[in-house]
Image (cartoon, rainbow, N blue to C red):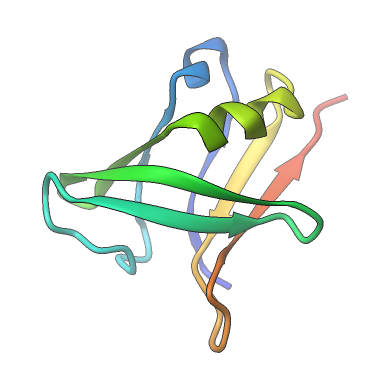
Length: 97
């Protein structure tokens, strides 16, 4: 699995997550909107994502808010590219003590 990007959650992530696709595997048409199906292995979400150009994206929406309910400030969230044969992206949350 390749890392698309990761973030340490902060208060400003409540509205969304601005990230760079380091794998260059997401659709890159500026202004386009995509839905990323994401799973952590036990739960899944449909995140709304807008391409901003230059491999930059903004993830937001109702599912992002639902995801944040279980997360805490300073948790590290890592988004991975799809693996062969999978129709979703993996998401890993590392809890900060």
